Figure 1 (cartoon, rainbow, N blue to C red):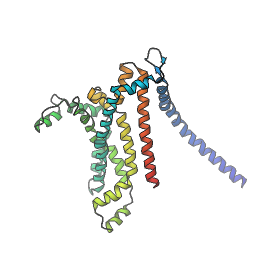
Figure 2: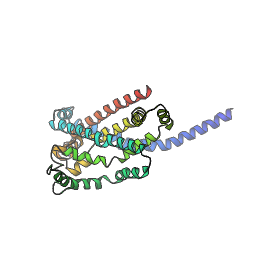
Figure 3: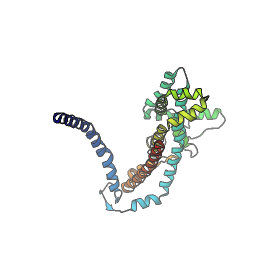
Figure 4: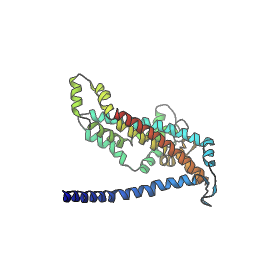
Amino acid sequence: MIKLQAIRKKVLSRKFAVCCLFIIPCAAFYVIFRYWPFLQSLFYSFFHYDYMNPPGDWAGFDNYINTFRSSVFWTSLWTTVKLFLLSLAFGFLVPILQALFLAEIKRGKATFRYMYLIPAGIPSIATLAVWKYIWNPQGGLANVISSALGFGTHDWLFEPNTALFALRFSCILGGGLGMMIYFVAINNIDSEIYSAAKIDGANGWQQMFLITIPNILGTIGIQFLLTLTSSLLTFDDVYILTGGAESSQTVVMGIYRKAFSELNMGQGMAMSVVIMLITLSVSIVQIKLQYRDNKG
């Protein structure tokens, strides 16, 4: 009995050592490249840091006060919120509809799966270059179609009424990965539930709203958080397509300009901390609501 316990302890200690072998590098990566930069940002946000004399003079909460008093910050935050709402339409709801459609068809599932998924594998830089040509006011495809339909021509990426729509419309073609996530979640639903529903006389719409959607709410919640986070951190498509024009300046674009154009790193860091706290707060609320629903 004593020998058996000793062997068991050795096995557990070896398993623990193997686990540590995999966990420690990952933990070190997160500490060095995630938490340490955040702690540095938090530290410099309390100084008048301008690249020339780091960390600069003590500022206290001045950078945060100036951030909340800045009309540019609130305008860019509202722009980011509108971009998030458009992301819900193009990059969140559309993949759900695509997955529901793909789950219902009987033939050609593989063809449609690859058709939706291939665009998601194209590098974003290449995709944005194509979209920049499509939205070009001088002979771009969007203006060709708009003129043919009698709506005239527009400077799609720089007009206030069309800029955000043009930025987020490309999410329809880039939603293949989200569609596949929903499709896998739908396929994991027990087929016997659908069989029982058919016996009870439930039609396709009733099965979708009473079985399919309730069973993928967890996946929908996770995708919602990812959509929110990606919207708050939107930078590359705005920078490449519009250069951060006033009609499409997001919060991250405002942070970039404050830190690297105006060389006001202190306030730029303060803005980034505020956005991080907003994202974290919304994420915690969403996770708690999801946990409560799953527990119930």
